[in-house]
Length: 454
Image 1 (cartoon, one colour):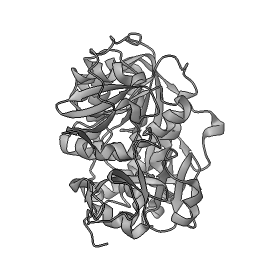
Image 2 (cartoon, one colour):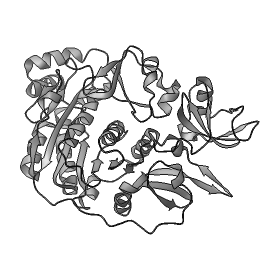
Image 3 (spheres, helix red, strand yellow):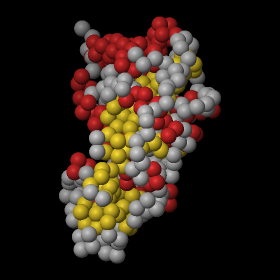
Image 4 (cartoon, helix red, strand yellow):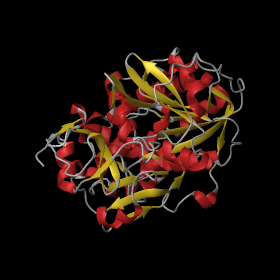
């Protein structure tokens, strides 16, 4: 009987060749790498070397950094402010593919992008930054996670990143399929057998089997078939896994081409870095050849189906709540119960169209709630990249005071204005307090507080 270990070696050899497989197998015994991706709309460039000394750039990500050792991210205020996201460097290749796809598209209207299997949010935040770098605020990014608990984590990470063009949903792929040709791009980082995570996850090694590979490959095809009707003709699918075998990768891409109606799209050779292994239809990033973990990525263009659907204009406007004046962009005010929120005007029609069709966790930016004559600002508002610089009084604090605030300890702000104040560290907003003079009410959310000893 062939052992699971022997089968894994066979599958790896089939996917990348015997010589490459030998290098990869050796590298799987080495420690996992550590990398982060900076938020270009938040992170002060002057602080990069101070916060991440000895870092090296990720070849396919202008915002990605390989860092020499893993710090205690929990004790870094910039981490809680959404200034960077801790993400494996190989998974950043999907963002690289998205940027190449954006260069192939006509930028007409407001492009709609779906990140189908998005939790915990690494690829979504990369996509948001990439879309903003190319399109400014003229896009809609729907970040979806079918498992509700994971969707809540995703929504929190999206809120901390702070881009209001992102909408978080929790829907089965088939629910999107029923909508029709809504999206221009779908990113599908589908659940897989996890071979690329062997260095980081011992459980992935224990759970690996040929049967599980077959189960994953079948589930991936179902996911693609279910969501396929929501991709407009001529639109792009960016398909990715964190595994090596061809059954979940090239074979499924071939299946999509034959059964769903698509053609494989190659990235320009000038944009494929040394160390990335070119496969039959995509690209494989393998430890031993790149510093990160395992990742597969392929791009397909849909050659059948319907053209992109128009959406009706949104609901009747509510009486002005004063929220629009806080933002440096055109927004639409919305009431959800007693919560005042805003949707970017460029994406508002699309967001409201989806509200009645799939389960929405969050959209736009939560602004706050009326309490008497005050509007108590929402914690998400502090982290939004489109919040105006003069929307609230600001108080600059040192690192220890910042950590106390994030720990939800009592803080005082000598000399700060009374009322709602935006607490900042090195100019980066962290959250709100209500300054009473002698003390402050800390408005940092309980669910996001630092729980370890500071």
